[in-house]
Image (tube, rainbow, N blue to C red; front, side, top):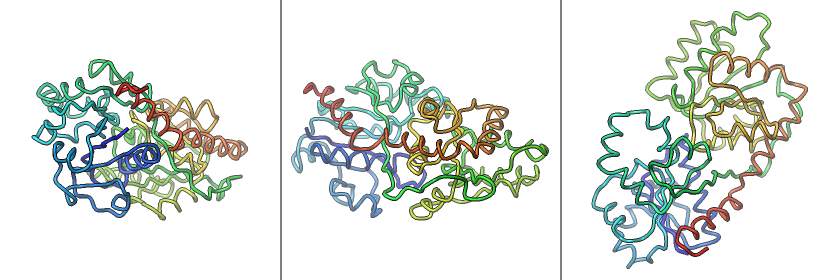
Length: 364
């Protein structure tokens, strides 16, 4: 099977597709012939070093030229949804007769459709409804993503999660690193999707509670629309500057060091596709405090790998308090978190997705 992956991605350190797209394609390249063409000329060494990666610096994309230059794909996979615009290049692909799959990465859910609603309604009516309906299938990451997207986009779909690369040397976790647990959030510092507005409300009363367990929370990530500054001001006003630190983004070795030094991971999202940051935290053996919107609350709960709370200030606050009081159960929960990560290895997920692709093109 010959598979052409098309994307229009920037290299954004805290965007899940930055990592999961090349990881998926790399795992599939061990099983089938693949080419990944990114419409933006990104030359990051992390991507350029991949033998299947191409971009406009290699050649301008045209589906007819591609089929003569390389090969005619059996299947085209579009990574992300609204990143593609109805220009001549895309319309040429859609009129080629080659079946295609869309992996929307949460873009079709009611939560994401609720952002910039008016603009999306117009764009959907003009083009994107037909784009989705013309797909041979939609690839959702979780049942929750499919349910929150509904069948109006396309009745044909399959569900396969993101994967994760487990670190070769994982930290051994018997207890917290210090006297109090270090809780970390690593992701975009953004109020709505990540639920950081609710987290702020949850944290504010803690300074007034003398019997609250002690902990330290570090929030790492790119600030969206200045929300990091807003958080810092509110935390300072609440007298929580010594308890919560809002920091910048971390990548590579720096992020590795942060996750190794952490004790607990926190993610309070309203909605996600399949959160790479949470999977990565599990790979490091970090017990996690999560909301149902992360799409991983069921597996975290089933494996005993953390604490699940509703997206309300009271529930989030209670979960943090319980987590910071759970030193005796810590080692067992850390092992459970590693088990969660092992459920999502890229090689096993690639084999399953390959079967889905073969069904889509009628070869299975």
